Length: 149
Image (tube, rainbow, N blue to C red; front, top):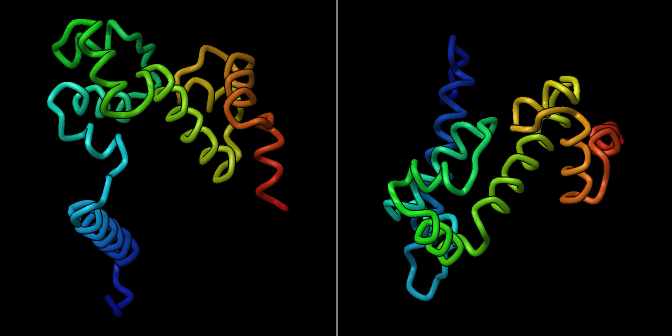
C-alpha cells in the first residue's frame, strides 16, 4: 500500500472498493438495521437481474416489458416486485440512475451534452436536459458550472 509502483492507484482504488463493500455488508447485516431497497433487491432473482442490466447498460432503451423479459417474469409480476423491493417503479429508478450517472459525467468531464445524453439513454440533448431539470431542479449546464464554484 505504501509503495508507489506501477498500478498503485488501481490497487488502492480496488482496496477502497472492497473496504466499502465489506463495511456496507456488515452494517446492513446488523440486527435492527433496515438496508435500502436497492440493496435488498439485488439479492432477489428477478429484481436483482433487472437492476444489474440497468446498471450495466443504462443507454439501452429499456421498457418495463424489456426489463421483465430480461428478469424472466411477466410485466405485472416484475413491476409489482420491483416497486415492493426497491421502493419505486422500475422506470422511475432507471431515470434516477441515468440522471445520477449524467450528473457525475457533467462534473468530471467536458463531454458534450449530446454525448452524455446518448451515453445515459436519451435520444438527444434536449430530451436529456428536460429530464435532468425535472429530476435535479437545475439544467445540466448549470449543474456543470457549479463544479467550478
